[in-house]
Length: 121
Image (tube, rainbow, N blue to C red; front, side):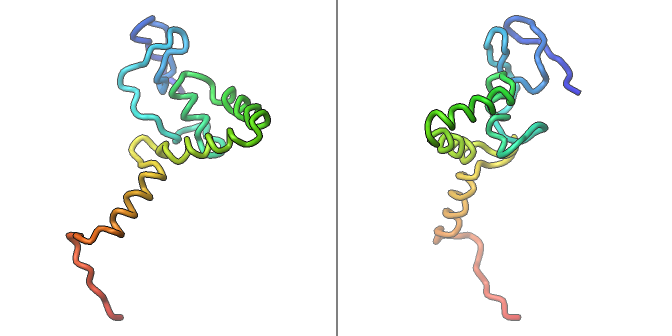
């Protein structure tokens, strides 16, 4: 169950995971980085992450996304996928784009400290 905490600016009750006060729009200290993980994740977790970041209900953002998808003819889907690519799945995780960049760096790094030894079985 969510334990309420107080906003640093207006002293209104907030949910524990809130990063921004829905009343006065003040950012809360110690809220951590934006991530897609958590309870209430539906598809890829982008609406949940945005809702947590801006203090808005994720269901409202999902409805807004479906409307934007119909109005923009698919451009909203590209924005959704970009947000997914640049948002980590958990607070301690790495975004999918960062994982790909790290992998490419490891593969193409010629000055690797680890010796590559072939094992014969």
